[in-house]
Length: 122
Length: 394
Image (spheres, rainbow over the protein chains, first blue to last red):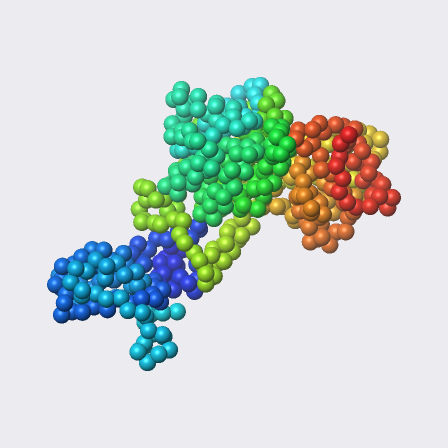
């Protein structure tokens, strides 16, 4: 495949859901490794993990088990949860030995508790 | 300068030779009559060290095409062969191969489908693959099966095509009957077929690539399918170029429609595959009696050469379509529907009749073809209605 066609898809992979037929490589081959970070899946969530920083011991069990790399860590210290990608599977809360993660029902998007919509909340 | 060996060979033997000369990296196959000899011969070439191919003996045709898809995605040149129930068992993988734009070359020995069980030649199997996104070629002779099989690699692997190609020959009539054939030398064929450079192979590629992705709601699937339609539509110039390039090497002509005396013909039979010879014998006989008969044989069936065919048929007073399979419940058989649509598209309201013939290897007699040409004369004279009939039944 020519470089022209490759670069055409490569530059705008974040917006693949707006591509027309000619933007795809033949067979819809994807040549942009690591692009799943661009695909916000937070809107799939019906249950939300809530983190209790006080109870957290930074044991990293949740970080190890999270299938969507949504446990945010800086310098070996947990800093929060990536709600743009967390699908609400609940594995983190299930694995946590210190009751530092709790699953709550995702608020109704139109309620006051919901706050501003997260990316990927379509 | 090409070196030509003249030999007596069957269609199966010639396809096996073509595959050996094209030297695929991987060939995965399962035996089925009347294709078996293609893979049997090829396996012997591998065992004898005459071709260095990873030969994968699988447990079914479903597995055969799956293995071919995996190997092709990895970046290999891939070939296989099947027939009838085997092709039917590949059905879901046929769509995957074309949807992933994998340039797999497969020979199909055209054969009837059960039930009732029957191992002989007709086009019921390949017509089931008509809408799967594969390019479909039909050979008339063992020689042409060889030529088409080599041309197939050039078409499939062309960077702007990247589609699987099925190179078909009629079961037993072409697969097993021995004919005078010309085999070109290995170096000449290798130079014609060329080396295959996959765009984004999963193995040994410079670019990390993912294949077979999920595309769901929101229209992404829809856009990708539109690209697939555009690809097969745009493949016709590449098919012609590949065929003409081989014609220049071997000296045998290449036309997507092999038209025999159609320029001034009043009555034309349209046919695919091995029955064309019988049709020409009868057409020649009729011409000796002053009746202008012609034969239009479709060599490339998908993409369908509707413009070329309409050009060939435009002067006819009546057209008969020989269909070696039925599209049960449809107005005409599959080829008949395509031909009528091509005529309509060009504004040609030529009366047509569709003849379902030779199912399950039933004989295609000269008398039956005389009857068809006779009916075309009645059709043109307004003494017979358009429609479908079974030709040659008791």
